[in-house]
Length: 580
Image 1: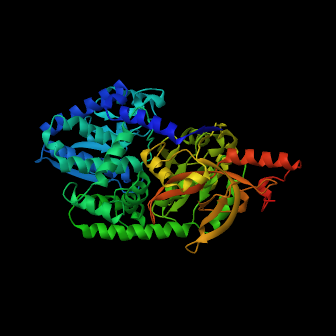
Image 2: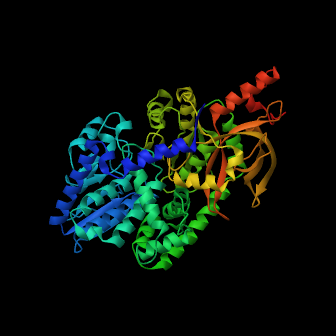
Image 3: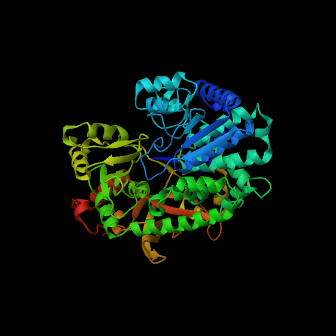
């Protein structure tokens, strides 16, 4: 296990900050392709009377479309620009309900990389595609590499670790910055501030790597946060100001996590409720964000609260039984078939279960409209690619008869059109040993319990904001005695406990699915586990600590306890309580 200090993280962050402030951080081939696509878009604006943006239904799609529309109309205020968001009730990808207009030039955002032939046939050879999803076909990858109307950084180098890890919002923002140098209207301060905030929200919410050394992700987030910290009705768009105010982030201490879990989740929420309200929620959200009627925002805020209540209700006894079983099972992948759940919630459930079990989870739900299953898959760090695993499973003899569509990222996929969930589960079980976990050296942040309550430590962590994949710091390794496990707010899945170290320093730990089995103790009664630390502004700015479930560390801990006791323990999954 490797330790890193706050000071070492700060030094790393400073180096990255300086690089990320300029486009020099991008590999030359990435910078060149962005510049060429921006130039070609500017040319299209010059000779087009109307353009249309087709975008995905999530926050990345919505934020990237917002930036692109502002950019196009900033270059030509008389240009008619229509925006159509995909409807989450349908399949992922370019919406089939759009009827092309031969006199309109189309820009497709946050989707389309794997639909190139169909897009060109339907919308024309010169259609723009700006996307960041993995390209599955080598021929298509080469098209993206050389056609300046096609922009996807993942096409540029076969070693994907050398490509810029932008989301669609980041790419739209980079096109804006390229064009702002040539079109003075795009540099008007209020517009610039507004676009920077939207770029920040989309980049944070799409969980790109903030520490990516080939993109401006970190700078985009920091820049947007700085605007938010000083925002008022005069220096950003008034509707956006209202959204920030109502989602509770309009303050000088708002963090990346606040933006993601409050503002970003709000922008995502309407599309997730599409099947509930029987309307295209993403389109409603886009219209509300780009309009001036704050009453529409209030309606969507109420819808978001309804969504939160529904997500809590999904975490029922059946959910917790599955979680407990899979946390201690031998396989590295599992399928959860949810009952009475809108298909759009599958990604949320899969993400929560993946985090709680530290394994790949596929969540499926029956779709009445199509009479098929749809859902999402999420993977955890250090495992085989979920996308490649699914490719292998679906093409195997055990999957004969399966009808399915899926795609997305290496470790986050969307699934639709599945005819038989039981057959897919059976095929996955037949190959589950091929979902391999590589043992990794765990890097932990050296942060003793005694320093967690120190106000100076809070200030030190604020200097690192944002950092890491998404916006997480390395976890801390905690050791001590556990006491006072309790339920919060009357919800049995919201729990906390106290940890006391050898020097009698105590800290409150949040665990959303607390069970004693998660914390085996040695003969001295000591538990050892990982916890995520972050900054919370709830009831005063302080360090918040929540548990991180890590299969590798858990197994190492079991072995330590076995050696201490000098007797073999029964398999963990057969025990109800292994504390002694």
